Amino acid sequence: MAINFLNNPKVGDNTKIEIGTGSDLQIYHDGSNSFITNSTGDLTISNTGDDLILKSADDFLLYVQGSELAIQAVGNAGVILRHNNAVKFETTSAGATIQNSTTSNLQLQSNQGTWV
Image 1 (cartoon, one colour):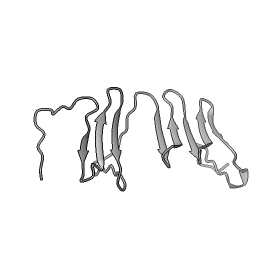
Image 2 (tube, helix red, strand yellow):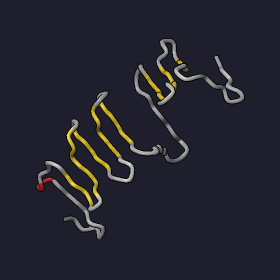
Image 3 (cartoon, helix red, strand yellow):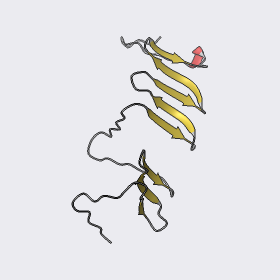
Image 4 (tube, helix red, strand yellow):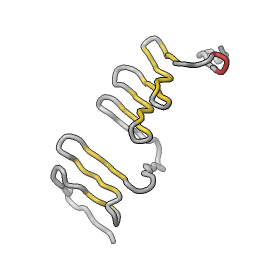
């Protein structure tokens, strides 16, 4: 079945566009925030043209396992990487900080291409 959306279709706040037999994919706006919710399998965003660009007016947060913050890019600040909700790597205005690492397995490369 094909559906044609013509002339900028509009739905009001709190009205969901539901796709799939069991409403597996939902797109909606609650008046303050917008949501894309997938309840079956993986949600894949595929681009075969060029780059995938995500833009945010402020921060970018990536959660795994439902509520574990894994990647946090803070507007006009830095990027924080977490493992199991614990900060492991953080960029700062002076460079970067690595938490709880052992120097025996740490490899850094300078901008001259030599290993330190």
